[in-house]
Image 1 (cartoon, rainbow, N blue to C red):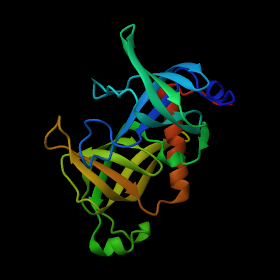
Image 2 (image 1 turned 120 degrees about the vertical axis):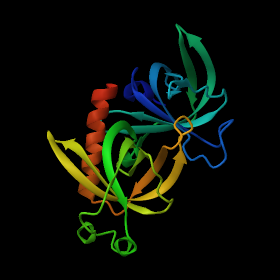
Image 3 (image 1 turned 90 degrees about the vertical axis):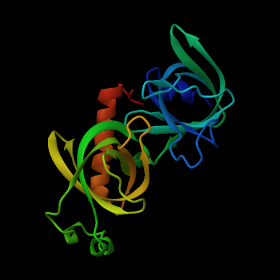
Length: 243
C-alpha cells in the first residue's frame, strides 16, 4: 500500500462498510447493507482495527471472513478499498474488528454518495401526473398544495432517507422541501425525488422509512448539499483533515 493507509487514515476517522455479497442472516430483498463505524488503530499498511458497528443501540456482529468495501472519510475527500474481516474480539469493554485490506487505497470521487446521519424537518407531497411530465422544471410545479411532514434521517448529494407516519408508492415522484445552513444562512431546498424503497420500521409500527433519489437536481444545489454534509460531519464526527 506504499504507506497510504497511515498517511490518509487516522484513529477516529469515520469509515463505512458495505458488504460484498449477501451477509449471513440478511433478509431477501433488503437493500441497505451499509454499516458505519470508527477507525481505532492503523495496525500496519494493510491492516486496520475498527470498532464493531452499532445500529439502533444494537451491536452488529460482522462475521470473520466477511468481505466489505471500506470508505474512509476525510476533509471533503473519500478513500475506498476492499477488505476482509480476519479477527474480532472484545477489549476494554469494546468490540473490535481487525480487517485486512485486499486492494489498494484509492481516491473515491463520488462524494455525492456520502450519507450523513441527521435529523431534519422536511415537508413533501406527491407530484401530480401533469407535474411528473415536467419534473425537470421546478417552475412548472404547482404552488400552494398541501404538504406532509416528515423527518430526514440521512442525507447525501444523491438523495435522502426520511421517516414518516405515511407511505408513498415505490417509484412515485415527490417534492421534498427542507432547509440547510449554507455559509451561515438558512436556505430552502425544493427538490424532486424518486422513491426507491419504502419499509415499515420493525420497532415502530405505523412509521415508514423512505429511500429517495434526487431527480434532475441543480448542480449548484448538489454541491451546496455536499459541502453542508462535510462541514457538519467534521463538527459532529471530528473527521481528520487529509493532507
